[in-house]
Image (cartoon, rainbow, N blue to C red):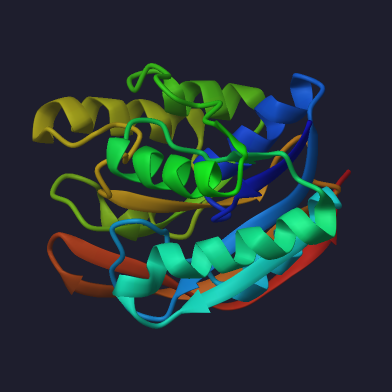
Length: 227
């Protein structure tokens, strides 16, 4: 089975790639849809240069497309997926969806249109232990944006430790946000993982828009050899 994976560069899509590879499946291409606007219900808004470095580090081809109109989000994915079917002979589309039926149903609709199997390797994973699972697995990530009450802005832009993860779990109980950020409370960016041949380094600055909204704006990123 040749698989195209919807890829954002965040923890969920990177973990999905690893799970698929561990099952012996062939990840032929990563697909990244990049919204040009601020908020999207369907897609994470990644940095294109970061996506390219992550894909290079894993040795997997990357296909990207920019969407400028929210009403064309599925249309753009449809066009890219059609290209990937021709170029890479993919027979399945995978996503990193964990809890969002909104995302899952729309991705499955597009997959069905192209006669592809839809796969969601992270679906239904326990929300309270997911961040622990990722950290123990060796996936290292930073928080790139925060849009909720209760997450400290001091966590932006630095690689989270297990101590940070435990703090997030405590705060999620106190403030009521989803501990794996499936409600859009935060977005993540993976800087290292078992499949990465190089580690991603990022420099940037924190932009605080309100008490509940802040971003780590990346100014520079590069790959460095792993020990």
